[in-house]
Amino acid sequence: MRLPYHIISSSVISSVVYILTQSFILAITTFFSGILIDIDHFIDYFVNEKKIKFDIKDFFYKCDNCKLEKAILILHSYEIMFVFLLCLFVINVQIYKGIVIGFLSHFMIDVLWNLTKGYSPIQCYSFIFRSLQKFEYKKIFFNNFM
Image (tube, rainbow, N blue to C red):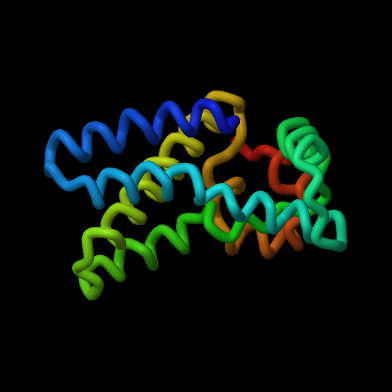
């Protein structure tokens, strides 16, 4: 899903969080984490470029048009989401709760969005599956088993 949609969805979700909890900290961390989870796309971009390159136009072009060879996407995985959820039992801090809400809502929206595009949610969002495919973008996203 593209950035403007994540900004809109994070705005809606963080507003609902604020209405339900009256916690500004929880709402604002939900908003920002719902967008900043995409930092892993930058990591993938740097890995693919084999250097740290801050060319925003090229970044969005390659990400939006599936021009990357590797898709590591460390934060976009069932496994990391499970770890974040488990940590909720230990970390009882508003900021951490907001981060988890933002990450999970972003993640669920991405899964649903890519499902409508015909991508397998298991292939695309399992870090283990991606690693078994050597993080090769074409094997992950274009060999659909659905």
